[in-house]
Length: 291
Image 1 (cartoon, helix red, strand yellow):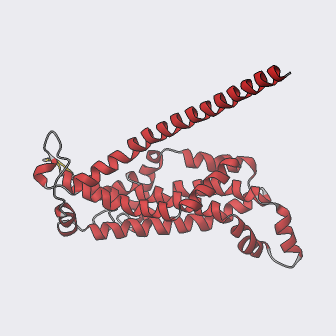
Image 2 (cartoon, rainbow, N blue to C red):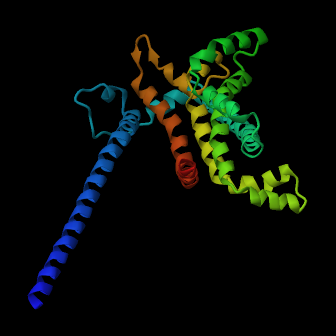
Image 3 (cartoon, helix red, strand yellow):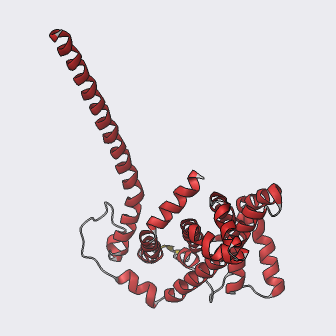
């Protein structure tokens, strides 16, 4: 009996050891894979940041110089020679206004569809189709309307074009969040004398705050990074950062220092925004994925 117990104990130890070894192996390869992908993602940003701090002579050297004295010459150049504060203001204004309108109209529309089945299934599919429509398909009609209405080179036309693809996206995202909220909570508020709008404002939107945060952040990023509409419909007064950055690709060559500095000016605010709201973004997107 003792020999059998010893054999069983040794077998159990081998199984436990094998299980722990397999777990450690899986974790090792998982962390290795994450590290490789993190390097792939972070290295281009690191390279751009390093290039923006180099002197013009060092930028084009081959092999590249890794150790050098940093300089802000490229940043001074884009601030003095080019009206980059104006471009930054344009991008911020357009992105904030577009995001605000998308959240207000999108939340009302999504609540109506989720609770009252407005438009039926066909309307929901039409919203999804509007979001997936290529930008080029609506660019020419918007350009013709902007010329006829004399609103080209204005904030209004850029905001309207951004809403054409951000509003369907916001509605589609928020429908899932509103459908996941139990109706009984709103019905209890209606019994207590609240209206549908009061129930939406004081109860539903508070519960759906993670979804609103996620939709708002993603909408802001889409509007901030949008290029094709801004390229065609803006002018010197309303030019956004993506269009301004493309101006450094000149006929004489690429102004690598200015291009890298301008890119960092565009990237850093988005990175700060993502870090500040990362908890809301992860929670909102994960809830949407579960739904």
